[in-house]
Amino acid sequence: MFSRMFGKPKQETNALMTLDKLNETLEMLEKKEKVLQKKASTEVEKAKDFTRAKNKRAAIQCLKRKRLYEQQIEQLGNFQLRIHDQMIMLEGAKATTETVDALRTGASAMKAMQKATNIDDVDKTMDEINEQTENMKQIQEALATPIGAAADFDEDELEAELEELEGAELEEQLLQPATTALAAPVHVPAGKQPARPIPQKRTAEEDELAALQAEMAL
Image: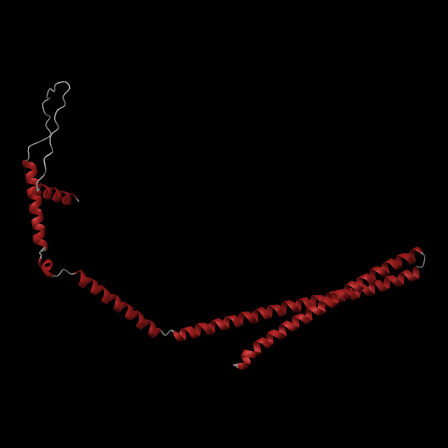
């Protein structure tokens, strides 16, 4: 366990050190390449000068040195390409290792949570919840059940009584005289207004009947 704990940081440190070393080498090769390119350009200028001076042999020697520099430049370019390839592979391996470590950590955490949550405990908890829900339902039904005098009322009798009241109300409406007939015109002297009819107060029975009609209309 401790080797695994202390091994990962060491591997990570080695990878970072290797990348740093490759970067340093790459910078050194790039500097050498620039120096060789400058030397090759210088040899070209010398060859031009010797050509103008009609010194053909010296001009050819300058061109030979230029080609040697160009060969070295090409070789340095190949070295740089290999280092770039190595760095890409190393960075990819580092990313792969970190991804695997993260997945392993996630799997371990999930395993620990599964151990802490047993399926039997889940089933037991759900059974307790269902039992408590059923008990609460029974309590609510018991509280909603009528008690005392209200429990002795017969629903069928109440329905029959209501139907009798509805029939009596309908019969009373049919027996009342029609009130929609037009009254004969009454001549009212000029300057006088007909007296307004005084509204009659309804009795308690009429109020109760009106309330019953409103309930039946609903």
